[in-house]
Length: 280
Picture (cartoon, rainbow, N blue to C red):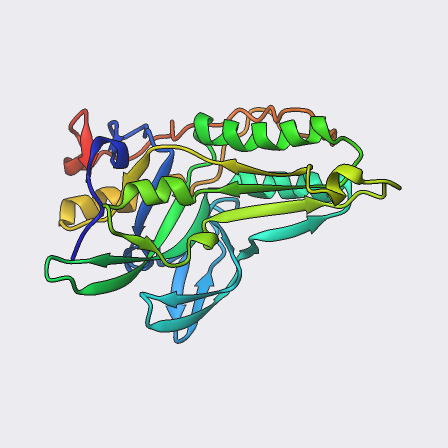
């Protein structure tokens, strides 16, 4: 079976036990279920996104989905505890709450990918894409997209979509096919009470941001890599440490949250004592 290429573009580095350099991460859903049982559980035909444990009530992950998936192309599953990929907002408070929801936790998308092995046998597997919204590059792209559309259509209706399809396509080897590529996006539509929304009516104020970034391959094939991936996901799902809150409700003001970029203490483990550990 063809596997994701561990090339420099589609791999990442875990730099020591205290910090990580990760913009996006990808791993099979089956492995995510094994590594994060406190956050994701498959119960019959239901995939539950669970509340974080009591010791990290503000942590965890935000799953964006339409509410259903075909696990590895065979098993139909319903999702619970997720957020809708496409939402409609009608007030400043709605916008602020939505913005904080998107930026306060790592985002998770599920998508199915078909690959061929050397005997031309086709297989389909469900992957989880994790967007590290605390990484400056990823956070900047989302905030910039939101602020730009607001400044250009202030007071009018608009729709903004963020798309991760291209970056995931580039992660897999040639010949792979994204079966549910549309699931790798999210959007919000702000409906104002303006009397004339000419730009919205003619589609001018409907924009798409194609998000870019390096993908960290968290697929694990050895106990050491499983240990690293587990620690990595647990660290990513910890509550954000904000030095300043986004308290005002003005549309066009850039968020001033100062995020602790994984710079928290971890108990050193034997497999993490090297200054540079690669996960491929």
